[in-house]
Amino acid sequence: MTREVRVAVFRPDDERLADAVELLDSLGATPVPDPMLAVEPTGAVPDAASYVVLTSKTGAELLAESGWSPGAATLVCIGPTTAEAARTAGWTVDLLPEKYSSTGLVDLLADDVAGETVAVARSDHGSDVLLDGLRAAGATVEETVLYRLTLPEGAGQSTVMAASGDLEGVCFTSSLTVENFLAAAADRDVRDEAVAGLNDAVVGAIGDPTRETAVANGVDVDVVPDRADFEELACRVVEAAAPTHHD
Image (cartoon, rainbow, N blue to C red):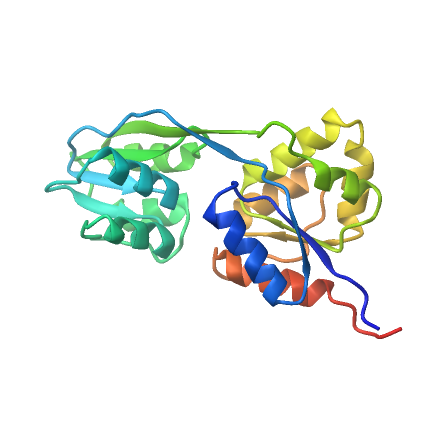
């Protein structure tokens, strides 16, 4: 008989979490949903600019709901999920970086934005790498905080499971999910035990920034997918966490 593979996922409590649970279930794992992020919209929208940069599906959807439009701006999206949300809103996506990260966006735009105004629309936890890189390339950069990311009340049951050795895998989808997981563990006085439990499990990070945050906090990372894609992350975590023997 194959041992149960329990995999925690920390996505916001919306269709992303529902889709993650469905995916993990289809892979034969037991999903442990524990939202570590809540989205609080600010109502802000970017001003007119030569370039508008969107860094998340959430941001694109909030702007669409507000009635905002990029107008004549060159619309840049960090990756295919954000681009899909922008196209669903009826906008033309002009540019996508090869690498779906702040560094990839800077590499994409650096040669073209000198003297231009670039509006960066994102959450309150965006990396300074993007802003600093675009300014170094000669752009005037205006950041618009579309939403704040907070730790939901009551989050953290998965930290107790980790501390008890009851998780076989976890899927961290941003640096903030790592930080909030550890904060929730600390609130329950199980931080050290939870980290030890993670290090006995298969830890997946969706990209290098998330991996670096985990490692900096004493968490060993076993899986980083080639693409910053949740489905690929989940598949690799389940594959690595699945027992290779039968009792």
